[in-house]
Image (tube, rainbow, N blue to C red; front, side, top):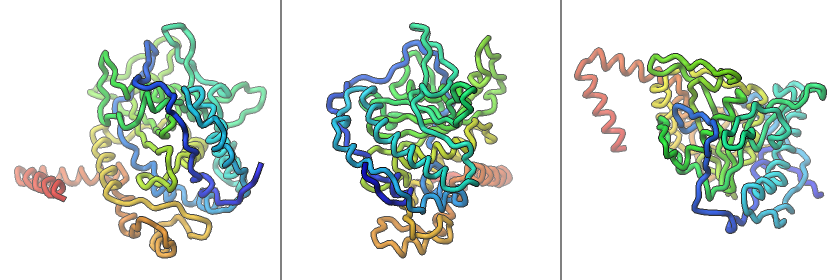
Length: 398
């Protein structure tokens, strides 16, 4: 097989081949039957899962790795294979296995072998779910356990058996499920579950069962990255006592954040600055560093408002495209010079604007600003409420 030399960043941004999904079933949706899935309390956008935010947060760890040039396998011939014709989930997984799995796996091996001092030790691998141990979810219809299609795992001694799945993933057809149907906010359970909710419940349950804070759904049109966090008890209620054999994690109240990365990208997606393979690589590297679900410190109401504010601010801004080997550091002080050196950059963003977006993207900072504002409004009585209405009116006009 041919070889190619490229930076790790450029390699992970090679476009996915075009798929032929004309033979896929349509007009139906993904269903659950009577599976014992649980639901998050709220589903919100994940504004921090973007190239801009990740490159700033991990600039010390991954800067030299992403800029460095390596010798990779050239898988471009795969785009000519008949595997591009998709008929069902099984045929989609077959293509993902020979394209995305190969490229992400090689990128992971390259990155984790770059520096012996790298924090991702032992190394993490991308694999099919059957390669890992997972606490089975009982399916009441036939009694068989249901497990994730994909996994991230760290290698254990051979005598230890299967390693645990620390990054669950699941395959879906876009004809049955798409992230554009997701309604953000509090999840409302009903007898007739909305078409978008079963897949969300599925990946949420996979993550909580595995105590994995990251996971993903992958289709023939997109990758949907998710992050799970535990919430404090709502309405002053205590968590339910776990039943015999059940994990206490399943009884806790959780929040799910998501970010959709499109399949088609002849250039890096301007909405998030990530390609599909680059997003998969980030998820694995982040899970390798710390995969366990964390407690959310903010109240749900404050968190929902803060994340909405962050999403609005990033929508108004423009994202930074990926850098190549000679385009300097990921650091904030280098952003302006980076833009001036690249003639084909479509979007230009000042360092000051990046700094402002970074501050606004922090849910903790946003919550603190709201508390200070509320304090002033309470002190000002009716005048405080008047000022708030005026400010909101001005924002809507802008």
